[in-house]
Image (cartoon, rainbow, N blue to C red; front, side):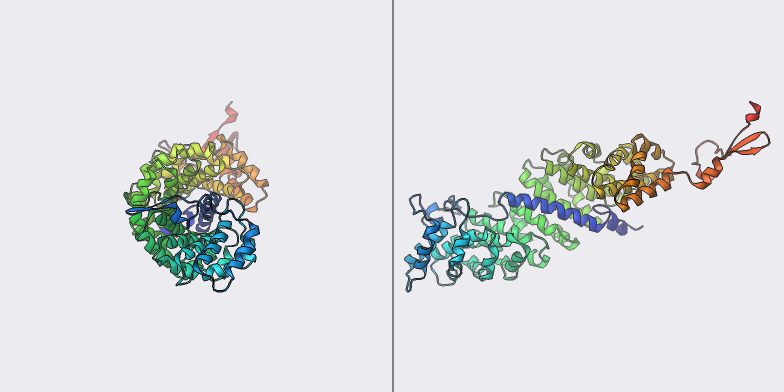
Length: 537
């Protein structure tokens, strides 16, 4: 079997499709956590912090459109009055600003946002109209803020249907940095809602003006919100086409450097994880961007908010070809794994085991690095004692080594106690992992059969034989068939052996024959037949 064929079968698990499924499940879990923490969408409240500017500051009053603690408190009962103000003929700028600011304040309250009431009365077309060229920038800012908060609800799609995306993108080049930031924020909320709406922003040309604000930010607040919006443009399933997001990679690399204006690089790293979560072309694009060494360096930092997305990106990279995996290893990855597999954060330990499982699906040399990393005993311990989601990842490490390693590497794996770890999975209520463990045990027994190692005895000592036999009653036909196959190949007695074991009478002598083909060579003379003369007793 050639190397790439084996890679297709064992990379990230038993087969490529299974590997992709596993990565998708983990990604969705992380994204759900991020969304629960309010990161997928953000709502701007009436009070925002002061924004630091290059060479000065913008006051909170300026950023919020002159909101103060003494500003009028609006309720849903004020919506009809505010709309009547918007609809009056020949409305002047001050009146327009006052009306839209009142509606925006309603949408900025803590708790339940009255987005439905504001939409029902017909305010959305007015908000979109206020984004057009020639409108006072203060009005544009308030309208974009109102749309941002509507986009933070489950009614995001109505903003897109109303035609707001293109005007929001156009205002990313507004001379008013407040307007640019608020439009970036709103587009981030739209993109974070779904892949369909994300693609609507990308197809309308949202990436390049957003990157311009990231490359030449007016202030840290604008930079931070634009980077967050970028992460939402890169995320989601189905993935965005690589060509629509690859232009972000040089910008991301520049900001990852120590000393850049961006203080919190977590969203940058999540962007990299989303871009790298694809086929080999996506992986190569991230490698070619020159960020791998920086990612590996981040893995050694004491900041799990950065380590987690960096590790996720590395995990995606080593799920690619052998050459792509090797590039990460040459960047100094393995020494960092010693720390990560025992990290205090459960999710980091899980991700670390996932990365090791990808490396273990590589070449014999790469498998050798996993075995010689000094962390295999930790993997074995976690496979027995950790929570199930971490145990599973550790079992994948063992399975990939057993399935793709050399005979010597498999023997090394067995000497560490892998058989016992694999046997403990057989009675878990997880059909897929039961099959993974069975296939790993089958590979180990094949090596033992070929090398004349007593792996069947090791299996028996771990109660593995009885566990495999009991799987003949398993509800899964696939589990049943694999268990039966192992029993017939390694644990049963075939008809030829039964005939050889039956004593043959030759005069007064009983002769017990053993098929020479079943014997393993030793340094001593091979005994082909054992003959005992019971008549002499």
